[in-house]
Amino acid sequence: MTSQPTQTQKTAGSAGPAPGGHGLQAGLKNRHLSMIAIGGVIGAGLFVGSSSGIATAGPGILLSYALVGTLVVLVMRMLGEMSAANPTSGSFSAHADRALGRWAGFSIGWLYWFFWVVVLAVEATAGAVILEGWIPAVPQWGWALIVMVVLTATNLVSVGSYGEFEFWFAGIKVVAIAAFIIIGGLAVFGLLPGVDSDQAGLSNLTEHGGFLPNGAGAILTGVLLVVFSFMGSEIATLAAGESENPQQAVTKATNSIIWRVAVFYLGSIFVVVALLPWDSKAIAKDGSYVAALDSLGIPHAGQIMNFIVLTSVLSCLNSGLYTASRMTFSLGQRGDAPKAFGRTTGNGVPRTAILASVVFGFVAVFFNYAYPDSVFLFLVNSSGAVALFVWLVICFSQLRMRKIIQRESPEKLVVKMWLYPYLTWATAALIVFVLGYMLTDTEHDGRKTVLLSLLVAALVLVTAFVKEKVGRGRAAGVEVAASAEPRDEVKTG
Figure 1 (cartoon, helix red, strand yellow):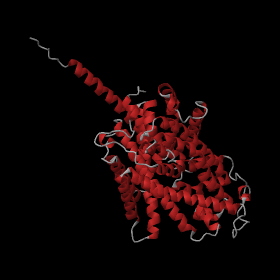
Figure 2: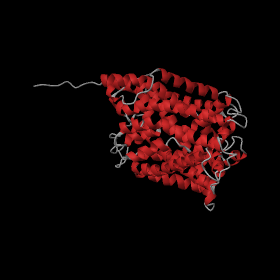
Figure 3: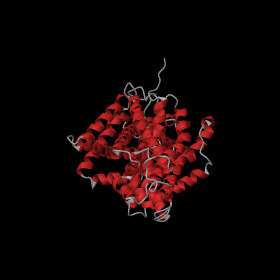
Figure 4: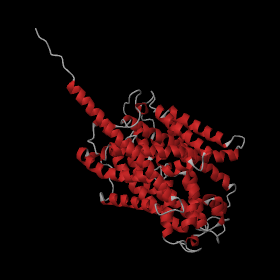
């Protein structure tokens, strides 16, 4: 099914001219890209979902985060190699289109879009819960509506307004988590006065049942609980297509992923499990980060963390809307979505792609309120494993794209995957292993998530193959009609 790349495919989704507008424009500044790259890897899931991982694996959750973090670093290295050579708003979908075939780019592009529009509903609801707690006069659905409308408006204005909002949202997250690591680290090593030295310390990593109180198998279960909190690290490669120097932006984001994962994920989780015993009732009751802040004697810890989580939610919502719209824009340019999705306004905004994504997001929000335990639960579970599908497709795309880049423009290989192709194959094998292990997990809905995600992926794949077959049939029909058309003889004299 792999098709020969055409010139259109090579440039599809880039910030070039598009019908009905002037194409995507380089409206993102270097500071925007830097903060998007740093903040993109810090999701609300880190603050909200880490407590369940700690309860499952104990201090060993550090190994779970390290394992998934290593996976993300390797996948981002592959994506960085391809995106630095060919920066495009379609990112891995456009690369899969060229390396594996139109069916691959179509399928993974629409699955990724589906993931993010469901995330819009999840994050809008999470933000609404916090805001309703502060101002109960406005109902929860009202806050969800307000949040969605405001961020839709910022995305519709220009890519620069998205970048500016994301710069401040991500900036708050980065400053907050950096301060938490520094203050918590001082407390762990007994350098912060007023902290109970009997409770905080490195001994929490080995006492209370040991480093792996629930056995080594809990590490893999922890992987299942934390893997989805890393989704979003690839956003920088999509956004790079609208920056002044895409190649430089992708290279910088790729090279910095190691320290971003090490500091923000491993660093902050280390502080949490060292400040408090992993089986502390406070972690289970209040959440890991709130409990850690409380242990430091910081007043109003819960409200402080609510503010940080809210900024993370708004950041994720903002980026999710941007990412979903740019993916459908790229699909529209490649003929894998309605042509209107591939058009832009005069200031380079893919308005139709944004509005289509928002509409589905609003529908999902409605389902969350009307049918939370049926329709919405299906949407969440059926999009849950998409992150792993995306990473797997990136692996297989990079195996083919390296050869294409080396043959056509080797000077563009400014970022290279380490130990190619062996480490690429090892990464793909690890992803398949995680998916397989999820099928054995019934306690945390791992099996349901994979099976429902595979069902949706199968439907998209069937659509891709049918579309490609119909397209070939039409092309053949046009050729036959053209060859059978009678031609007027040229008369002379």
